[in-house]
Length: 143
Ligand code: DQA
Image 1 (cartoon, rainbow, N blue to C red):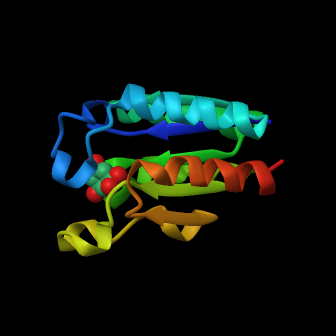
Image 2: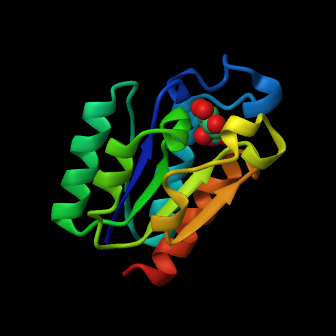
């Protein structure tokens, strides 16, 4: 089984970006943890990050066509991108919406997600530890 981990805008800046909120791990650290977890679980994990909405939409189409489960941190797009939502709605395998921070403890504009009602589950506020947890669930339930 293959699982795609898709990270949206500004997540390539992890480690530099607001470390008090997002922690000190870089995106490369996060990707290495995900790949390592995949090896442990016997699943193929691919991690991608983009700041370009059309690229994210294309990756979601690819996952939909291939039947791959997706762990999606759509970052700011979570709160307003109907294009990302419409692409994610085409997935046939489980979708886990993930946020590093607890968006519900933050500004009001982060409290609404255009993805949550089409996601299988939502993980928020566990830091980058949320990613291996999401992958564990996928390995057990999305085969
Ligand atoms: C985020 C939360 C979003 O509100 C924010 O725009 C991000 C990251 C998180 O992982 O906590 O860029 O998705």
